[in-house]
Length: 404
Image (cartoon, rainbow, N blue to C red; front, side, top):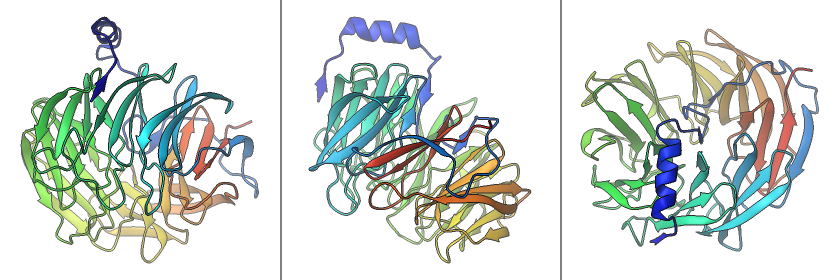
């Protein structure tokens, strides 16, 4: 464990950031795939929207970029070593910092999206190295290894979670017998609490946090359970066993108005749970075994859930009250985000689609093929200030989707 941040610097950061944090992270502000941009194009030319620039030297990787007011941060891997890259908003290079050993076996390269909080960037490498980096200079502030320092266990596709920050804490999932989930001080990397939870290994899911009047609940998938722990103490509040014991659970759950939704193609389908008002128990409301995708996420708009389906491949919607499938669309499986009234689906076959949802019904408005980049099309797209960012392996492209 390495710490380079002085006590004085910590005090300054605590004083200036407090609870008014600016967080840029995995799948948007609320980790729900919804982006606030408005005045976007409602259709695209056959060749796609205007490309502003591209970068083709990132190395291997499946991680999405994060975009702040001035910078773009994205990880990549070359010769088994991971790097975090910073670019300006025109794609110009600013700095490059080594982040540790990356996953170099099946599907080599980073799979975790960085989390930027005020002037610090947090990132988890595939072999378990958690690093804190100065957002302006690229200088490492501290690092903790989830295997050697926190007694975690690497799973078959490497660590994949995008780190979650709340206040002065950063949460991660080493997957150890006694360190299933942990909370660290985000300024120093020091352990605040550890939770045994159900003693599972980690899965591939990025956690979310539910904020109730009584408590905050950290929710994440482990290899055989969905778990909810008290974010202040690490106490296990509840769990749900995943009956069809696949070890692949990638999609971040969603919480809204007393209910938790999750989409899991590990065999468990699309599920709705009711959370008790005090946060200490859950009850299953419905389950649609036929629905679900591996890692593409899903979107909730009004009373409907939208996302791709793994087998048979299609895009579909469910009624959030009943779980019944409402509509389906012939479009390949992929990752889904939402902005300005429309769904954006980036398929595993490299096609970017623009879909209009309307009370569960769907219409494909436009699509275009991503021809640049390498390997699989797994990274989730990002929208910021009217620009659509797509990462495909070693390449990242920026497209202008603003109305003229």
